[in-house]
Amino acid sequence: MAALRRIRLTSFRNFDKAEFEISENTNVIFGPNGVGKTNLLESVYATIYKGRSFYQYSQPLIKNGAGSSQTMLEFTNPEGFSEEIGMHLKKGEKNFFRNGKRVIKSDFQRKYPLLTILPEDKAVFRNEPKLRRFFFDRSLKEVDSEYEKMLIDYDKVCRTRRFLMYQQKDDGIYLAEWMRLGSSIVRKRISYLNELNRILRKRGYPLLLGYATTAGQPQSVDQKQIADGFENCWRQKEREEREKKKILIGPQLDDFRLIYEGRDTRFFASSGETKLAVFWLKLAQAEYIKKELGTNPILLIDEFLESLDEEKAGILKAQFSGSQLFITSCHEVIFRFFGDSRRIEIGI
Image 1: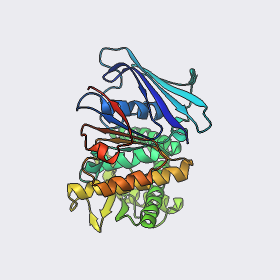
Image 2: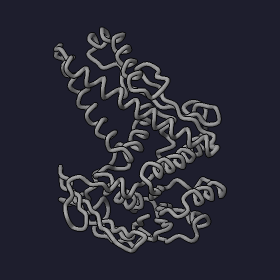
Image 3: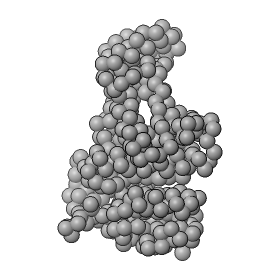
Image 4: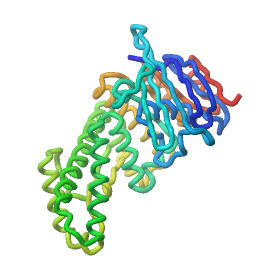
């Protein structure tokens, strides 16, 4: 497994110019709030995942007042060979590099997969459906580039259909593509949840994932069954869609369920239970990434571990033994669990 060994930043978020030496095992990024600990993690995430941010609503990646930003990540593999990948951002422009040469289509996310555990993750299962969709879509996009393209194309088709509805024009050409893409997205989501549930059951984690679709209730991941359900539901809603000039079914309206110890976390789980549910889910996602991509993900944990007990911290260390971990914290207690880590201080 390749390991990240050095991070260099120029005008990225609050960093003017900075360089960090990284351990191939566990790294604790330590310092007070507001000094850029999360930004350091996000520089890794954004470089590997095509300039995307951790969060759905995020500040620009370019430092305020600067015209551009640059990130460089140096990796080494077990044989000692190194590779440097980078990202250069300008307003409206993203460029990516490997060993100093620009790459048009990067494979960074398949070669250096990441898994994030963020403070906001536990809120996903207590708030509105769009946050759950964002959470699961993001994690699936990180291992399936085809799924990411489906979402982009589906969004374009939805916007065109809504425009034609508003203009009271025929949208028949786009309707078939909307059904094809929508049913494919639903199939991908259900397949993903089925695999995560298999891992959760195998590991004995007290968690079950479900999917509530607006386009029928498919009992399998058979593409035709899902597509037929899509068409049947659309026919029932066709007149209402025309009258309201809105799309009333599809994956953009679907929801996810997380059942922890038999209870739906939207209604019954305490904050602590929800945090544990996210913890079990992340462990399952890590195993899924390893199965799909053939390598352990690098783990980025942002201010999440302080309230976990020693037992859960031990489970995490055992699960990711041999993996590279990055943990941000502003509390010394973190070193009780990760005393053998490299300490990277920011703002101290």
